Picture 1 (spheres, rainbow, N blue to C red):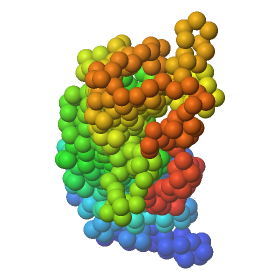
Picture 2 (spheres, rainbow, N blue to C red):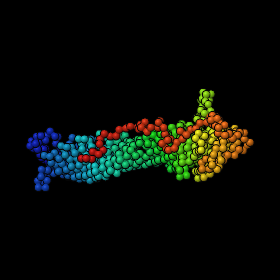
Picture 3 (tube, rainbow, N blue to C red):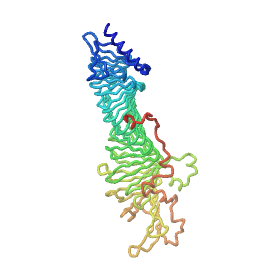
Length: 553
């Protein structure tokens, strides 16, 4: 009783001397085992200590601090407590530590030594912690460990926004969860929502995926998020990149926009474009908008462009389909078609024409039909037909054979005349390659030919051979027709140039499609493939608080 009376008299005296301080809500002494003063060692302090029955209890605006010893400076409205500290603030916060300093004016507590802060949604363990009760923030610059209902988070620095139930971690941030692991330079983590915003070099490692980025949002409960700035998803033996990535583990789904690439290391291929989707469960990926597939074949690149590219099937049987406005480019091959089918496991490539409508069937001329058909170029030879099939050796990846079905038309610009074209028509074409170069061709069914003949001595024009037959065979040398053999008795003649009218020098359906022939990768694209017309996949806001200023104080 005598002790409590002395304490109250002491506080009353202080309030009389410093009336302004009374408006600041002075720290209250609720309990102590005893008190003393030492003006030499601790001038101005009231030294409070425990006894066998009572510990020191100090109270300030809802916060209760329990300790073994406290140095209370009433004039400064400040104290330092030592020994088995328990700091509680209602039912929402409990903190233990070895020592604590508390300023009643600023309402800032400095906790030191094995600090452990507990709230209903999480716990924090660190060596030193600053607790700002005015802003409801706690921050530390020593290694901290945060544990919530599902994850363990560690970082070298952190700030906790209690009202928002949010952490801001910096420096070597790690989240450990049974389903995934997150590493980041900087990370905002919402404990109640279990969501994270990623800043700087970041990596998420799941059971079946790895994500890298420098900006991102990740829902840890649902394992889904949006990732930007050098974003990459390592998924199902593929690497998916894009300016914006979206990933959802539960649905085995990913999507990307702008500067998208899907790299398949097992099939030695890459698909690029400006919008892509990956469906892991269906073993499929689709990419559109300036879409381009690049396949490495025999140390050479095969480029395939189309409005839409679709890759399906397991890695050992990957099939690529290209739809609408297909253009292909390789060092020894060029091509244009409406659609394409590529199965590398059996070395088969099909170039297909666009099906004609009923009206087109009625009104299309032979020229219209041939212009609609797929076309390929081998060196100087242009070949077209209703369907073109290329077969490659699966071991060497070199072209082995070519087959063209229906409306076969071969055209080669005559090298010695100004306007002459060597031409061959037929129903079916079978060709073979030698060391990746076209070697010979067999054409069957209703075969027609126009061919310019020259003598071997001075290369003077002998005449123009115009012949029909059932089948013929051609051999190639240096990419040009070298000789022709008629396999069935031909019907025709060799005409002097002045005896064959110009309109008789081209076969019905003749169309020279050199303007469509792509010579460079840029030629694969047209005006509909502008890069600036594809928006970002998803726009979302990052926390407003400037991450660079979070630790300026």
